[in-house]
Image (cartoon, rainbow over all chains, first blue to last red; front, side):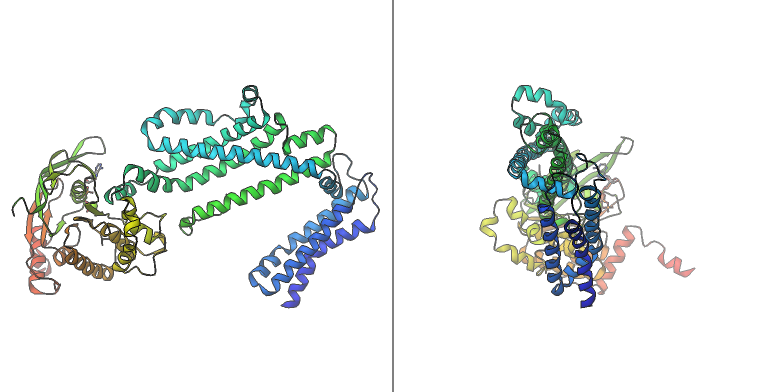
Length: 320
Length: 261
Ligand SMILES: Nc1ncnc2c1ncn2[C@@H]1O[C@H](COP(=O)(O)OP(=O)(O)OP(=O)(O)O)[C@@H](O)[C@H]1O
Ligand SMILES: [Mg+2]
């Protein structure tokens, strides 16, 4: 069994090993490619997965996962190898549209500071807008879900403005707010507001009557019923709204950065494109993938905490 | 019974609901009943005769079409923690643990800080020690019902209204909870009004049994149960009372004849 696991580990890293060997052994034919970053990343991956295997020796659960992921990781290494050969090593894939992995990774080196600046800009913009939208959405939803009058007057308004893609407001928002950052934050707030508000209101209105009646007979005031019955009952729906809003917010973030803001990854992509530096575009897309995945993971973490009481009651607490 | 010692007075109460086609359906007709302090009274009757409707009126969860409901001489207008209510389904808040469900009554009334230490006593009282941190979906139906009872009791309500509290349970759990209910009632001396489908349960627990007719629900008869506690389900006067109720409710007709054929 030990032997088998060691073989699995070797299999896992061999893909990256082969890719590294190819990168070292064959000369690069494309111009302006620095291989350093690429090779460092490959070596890093090999070390990482070797360390993962070492941890797996003692931990059965870890070992299972590691073994299950081996084929995928091997294939990843081979894919890099093939890509490297097709681009940097032979030039089959033409520049500037299809840069080699080493070219893309070199962007992280040559453009590090400017990229970081834009990542931070995107993060600030995202969180400003999304937290704003969540607060506004939950607030509106609570009012709609609790007060009949608000439901009557505001809910139709929310439904009507909610179907408009937030980016349609760009011209107006830019003119009125003057700042690209404020416009972006406003758009993200708008796009998060609707699904979260809608779900909050729905979740509250769908509370079973018996819970309110229980609350009344144990002495709960109206305010107590709102905070301790309707709101917790709406919590799963609120998170559904947040998930929907999140997907919209990523799109809105990038579009607003491309169309108005003076920073952010969307802006960076435009800028790189203007210089025909497509490898930087790819680099920015990779950062987006990582960044948005991390944000999703964070929201999932909060959600699983908040909805721990649903575990075992509902099938998929984990999917977002 | 004099008016003064009556905890609950129900006078000429009628209730009507809108039927499927919007037509008025008479559910309760001219129901009058007084319940004394520290009484244990059961309401029995066929399904749909308005037992829950009557209990909800007493709780103040709805108001009658006509008639009057009083508690200690004052009209019942809204629900209050003076009248605890145990619902047909436990109605535990799924987002709270057993312990927090039981503590909810204290929290709702702003008494939690002062009386926090009592929560464990109520957990133990209904035998849920070890399950304090479980969520409602992680415990059995009987345990959930016990938690619901503890949640109502922690407020020490003067009147406890129970709507088939043990209806969903198997007969063993049911019998042991019946004993618990008697113990709790005798310890605390509150007034119990319980709806049940189970004639034995009514006889085993209550001092008086209110029999209702099919819809529109009217009170057909009120029976005294003079036996002392704890009662013996196999005793002669117990079974005699059961037969009397069955006859009165028209279920025991011609039993002998059928066997004779
Ligand atoms: N809110 C309501 N709207 C319309 N009809 C109602 C409403 N509540 C109860 N009813 C009707 O009133 C009748 C009596 O209902 P109730 O729940 O009081 O019966 P019950 O005696 O408790 O029956 P069970 O023993 O089955 O619980 C039923 O026919 C029911 O359909
Ligand atoms: Mg009922």
